[in-house]
Structure formats: structure tokens, C-alpha cells
Figure 1 (cartoon, rainbow, N blue to C red):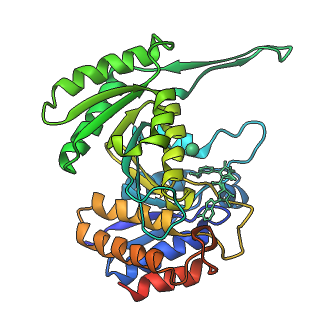
Figure 2: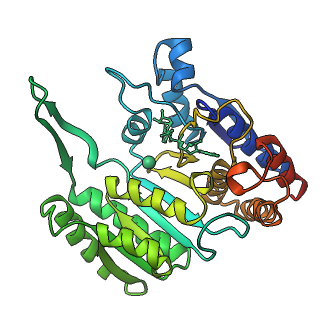
Length: 334
Ligand code: NAI
Ligand code: MG
């Protein structure tokens, strides 16, 4: 039977970059069925809910979702849709690879780093959020469990082994956040001992920021808690040319959601200006997850050649073209 993929086009630039990715998947001969589902603003308008039950049902039934960025409305009562999806489906691993492409305006040309971000705990667990009545005090709780830490660190080492990577760096702040980051680091050390074939390193998060900027070649796989992973993965995107170049996979036991790291970019939405590369790279992650690595590689090579040659690239890549021209240039090379 054909694989069915749930597709959330998303808000802002979402529909244009998702259309680009799907045209490319079709052009490379992926015979997927797509089930289009609504979330975010589009869903709110149609159903009055940001995440309607039919959407949740399709995500769990099809197991694989390709997702555009969603605008979380600012205001009372709206929690981030992304955070909700990650918690609801137990998508505990956020896999954010960055790799240099020749021809971008990035400062480095040899970056190849995967950040594995714990996706459901830590400062983003949403627990214990209190603001005092006078508005002068605010609290939030960070929660790390042994199970959660063990799952994410094991995921990182297994990925390292599977992909022939040499080193896993656990990033933490255990010197100050003794309880939470302390537990994460303790578990990371224990798990690391089970993988003698892979070099284990550990680094404090602030020093990691400095080192990533100055000596990024020291890094291979990074595994870290939720908040640090959010920040570090954007830093890593900056090493390879910006948010337009950075995909992310949210992986759980029973479902996976593939998306760009960036948001809905309201400043350029509807102008055919968005660089679709991040969502195309997310589609490549999806193909790899589905054991369709040969097709993934063909798409990657085509994208690399477009960027390198500068044939019809978007403005953030130094070009003068739009989303649709860029996509056509990729498809011509498949
Ligand atoms: P953003 O990532 O949408 O935009 C930041 C800057 O990067 C903007 O100048 C934008 O034009 C540029 N940019 C982003 N993607 C680009 C692309 N593909 N090509 C060219 N330029 C690109 O972040 P912002 O403005 O802070 O957030 C906008 C909305 O997106 C918010 O409502 C936020 O909640 C939401 N958001 C959603 C995410 C998701 O669904 N995964 C992730 C991050 C933010
Ligand atoms: Mg982020």
C-alpha cells in the first residue's frame, strides 16, 4: 500500500514552502498519498480550535507528518501548538542537523553538526507557571526525569552509531542547575559508558556557545535538554547560512513530525520570497526515516547544485529569485 503522509501547510510562508517540498517529492518519484489537515490559524478560522480532533486523529493514524510553520496567536489561553503536539504525541527527540552547502553566505564551509534536543521536558514542560497577583513575581518549573534523560541520550548514541558519527557531546549547566541539569549529566555519563565505540564529551552550555562560533569543527552530535537545544540549534543554523537552511524532525515511538526550524515569517509571507530549503531538508529527513535514502540523496544533490551554482536562488542565499523559481531549478536537476 502507498504510504500516506499527513500534511499541515501551516501559516504565513508555510503553504508556499510545503507546496515546493511536495512538488519535489513527486518529481523524484515518491508515490505518497497526502492527507491535508489543518492546524493553527487556518484551523481556528474553520473550526474554532487550533488543533481540531480530526487533525490529531490523522497525525496518529498516518504516523508521518510533514508540517509547515504555525503562527501561535499571541494572547490569553493559547499555548504553543508545537509544544502541544510534541507533548501529545510523545515526540521526545528533536533532531536538528545542520550541514554546510557551498554557495551560501555562511562564515564556514565544513559544518556538519546534529543537535538532538530533548523535546518534552525541562523548562518547556509547562509545569508550575505562576505569576503573583500583583504581577511582580513569576515562577516556572523545570522537570527532568531519569527515563526522559536516558531516552534522549540513548537516542543520540544510537543515531551516532547508525550514521557512523564519532562523538557525542552532552551539553548542560550542572554546575548551577544542580538538580535538573545535574541529573541529565549523570544519566548522560552512564549511557555514554555503554557506547565505547563513540567518543563521549560534556560541555557547559555557555562555553558551548563560544566554542560553536569559534571552533565548530569540534562538534559532531550534541545532545541536550529542551531550552538549551532550542537556542543551540538556532545558533547552529546561523553557522550554515540561517534559518532557511535548518530542518528538524520530532520523533516519538508512534509518530514523527518533520518541519523547518523557522517560523511562519510574516514579514515575507505571500511575496514568493521564502527559501524552501529548510522544509525540503525536512522532507529529506522524512525519506531517510522511511528508508528511502536514495531518493533523499538525489534531492540533496539537486539542492546543493542549485545553491552552489547560484541558479535561481532566493534573496537570503544572495540571489534574486523567489520560492517557485528555486523549486523549478531543483526539479530540473532531479
Ligand atoms: P521566523 O522564523 O518566522 O522569522 C525570523 C526571520 O527569518 C524573519 O526575518 C523571516 O523573514 C526569516 N525567515 C524565516 N524563514 C525563512 C525562509 N524560509 N526564507 C527566508 N527567510 C526566512 O520567526 P518569528 O518572526 O519570530 O516568528 C513568526 C511566527 O512563527 C510566530 O508566530 C512564531 O510563534 C511562529 N513560529 C513557529 C514555529 C513552528 O511552527 N515550528 C517555530 C518558530 C516560530
Ligand atoms: Mg526555536
